[in-house]
Length: 249
Length: 309
Ligand SMILES: Cc1cc2nc3c(=O)[nH]c(=O)nc-3n(C[C@H](O)[C@H](O)[C@H](O)COP(=O)(O)OP(=O)(O)OC[C@H]3O[C@@H](n4cnc5c(N)ncnc54)[C@H](O)[C@@H]3O)c2cc1C
Ligand SMILES: Nc1ncnc2c1ncn2[C@@H]1O[C@H](COP(=O)(O)O)[C@@H](O)[C@H]1O
Image 1 (cartoon, chains in turn brown, red):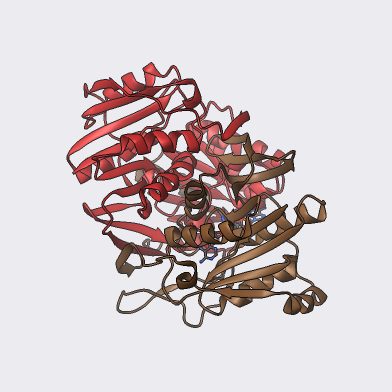
Image 2 (cartoon, rainbow over the protein chains, first blue to last red):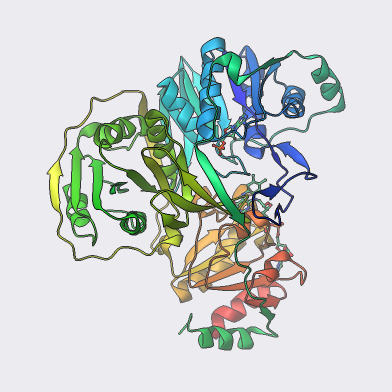
């Protein structure tokens, strides 16, 4: 079976971004970029399913500017077989990405597509669920364990109260949570091999998808900073302060 | 303006997150209908009808709504959504699972985890782990929204809305619940608690997490939380995680013990009213957001604090 994974190029999770002085956007010009951490987990899971003999091919898909090729190469270095870049300079919102992924699913006919649960830049947590709806496929979002057998996936999901396990028919969309696996580091030989793996480029226009943004960002701002706190000398002083704040009796 | 709010519940009682979503919807204005979809959930509809601001409760009662599968609930919401300008749900794991399906089928954007409402089409939402607040405007015919519960007060009780039964949609049969392992706890719910005691990797093990922090949480009547590192290391279950990709909390008092204060953790707790940090590293970033910092060994300081209360 074929597995698709979506990989997004985002500002690295260690970078603390700054708002542009005029409030029109976030300054990412010189920021370190990486694969969205949840997508690394998605690629790792797909590659493990291939290593277990369940998947036959893993195809990584990324949408965005030409530099997303680097993100796809990272996916190929982890073990994906080929990459698809959907190249555009338009700012992509989750609905547009879901429509692009739908077009790719129709072409590639995967049994499973694994997305990250959330991109750490827009924090939207939408794309996988939207794709599932557009395909009319079942979904298993926030997966912490995936078992694929007999044309079904049994997925344990992280939910607010704990865990739940569901069984879904394939084809289906799965989105990854943090504890699904620990992604491997790409080794140098695998990074070299990845350079030779096939990478196809498509465009939204060629796929016939309108990707115009639906939400207009009027402004961005940094949240109010907390007033500087103090260090207390000992437990007694802490207790006195907390009593004074009225947060303990 | 007319809002449809999707109620969150377990077929027996309404989840408090629904009350926060109702407050957000009430700010938008107009009719405010609450959809209760479940199985044998009349008691939920009854409490929904008593929420101040709700003008009507729509009750869909069918066996295949018992487990809240997003495939079935989305189909129901779509059938009920006609005529509403806004469809809202709390930004809980259930709301996040469901609402993008609704938005995609309506061919509209979803506006995730709003923290403020500027007008009927303009909302404020955090991005980049809460380091940036974006003000976004939607031109879509229907606004599909998830609401960050800590940013809106809980709606009160005292209303008396009519309950109207609505027809269930056919079972899609795409998904089957195998099992649920829910954390049983006598403590207050993490996301709504007044005091939260949270532990990180500094606790060193699950055994010491419980031994050191539980007596403190017991004394304070607090909920317990954790950093991702503590959850990943297996000290506690996943639903304890506070942060960008875990639960968002904003209690009166948040006590961070052995937590360094990575931005992903701060994203989940920096709106707390009073923050206390206990950490042996005086330079730990948690002290930059803490109102009161105590530098030292948590294994000495936490029992001392517990005894002093
Ligand atoms: C995509 C992504 C999402 C993430 N989401 C989240 C999230 O939602 N929530 C979250 O919390 N993290 C999240 N993280 C992880 C985050 O980046 C940090 O790795 C994590 O918060 C660190 O946890 P910690 O503070 O417990 O551990 P550490 O950073 O290891 O800190 C341990 C602290 O304990 C102190 N300490 C040790 N021993 C003692 C002692 N005896 N007495 C007193 N102090 C002591 C140390 O000084 C140190 O400051 C995410 C990361 C990524 C990449
Ligand atoms: N531009 C993109 N290219 C590829 N995958 C994407 C893109 N945007 C979002 N995704 C996928 O959708 C997931 C959730 O993103 P979001 O809905 O934006 O939080 C990400 O983890 C990716 O797997």
